[in-house]
Amino acid sequence: MTESERMGMISRRNLMLMAGAGTLAASIAPTLLQAQAANAETISDITPDGALKKLMEGNQRYIDQKRTFPDQARSRIVEVAKGQHPFATVLACSDSRVTPEIIFDQGLGDLFDVRIAGNFLDDVVLGNIEYAALELGVPLLVILGHERCGAVKAALDGKAVPGHISTLVEAIKPAVDATKNLAGDAWDNAVRANVKMNVEKLKDSSPILAEAVKAGKLKVVGGRYDLDSGKVEIIA
Image (cartoon, rainbow, N blue to C red; front, side):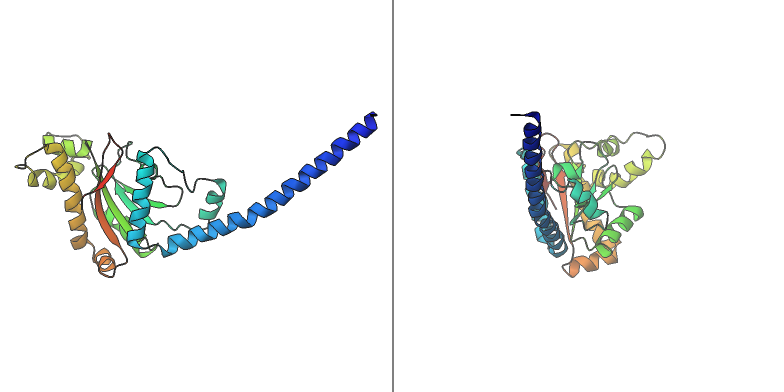
């Protein structure tokens, strides 16, 4: 075979490969667009109970180490750049071990995160949650505490703390006071009480959210994340 013939064969093979790649890309593109459209439609139509089910299924995948890492491709970056449609708001502790997208196996644009040490409500936090419910139509709010929370421990110890840390302690102190005489682990009792008290506080603190709950547009639940197992338990 001459050099000219060999080069001709290589050129024809490259042309065939390019044509095949073009056909594959053409077949994938509509499928990808359809999947993105279906996802957007699903998120916009999701019910409060459906949103909770989606979260808990993700947490089970995380526990089983069978995560799917959804909504983290380049296409998702492009999609959410045009607007956000999260299906759940998660008020979580600032603790670095409690990252909602990881423990619920979700991706970019799926969750509206509000994080503050001790996962308690104040005016700023309420404003964030109201924005998510009113402007974004998010159907689910999870107030998520966690095992061995440092902010709760500081309130439980009752010692003087420096600077603005005292504002965290004061906010959590009612949960500590409410569980003083309970049997069992005082730290975990306070963690659970803090979650439950903030779920109840929400109803009295925000007429906007209370009305959304009454209308069935918003579901509010309290959860506890177990640092050892990775499990989220619904407790309120």
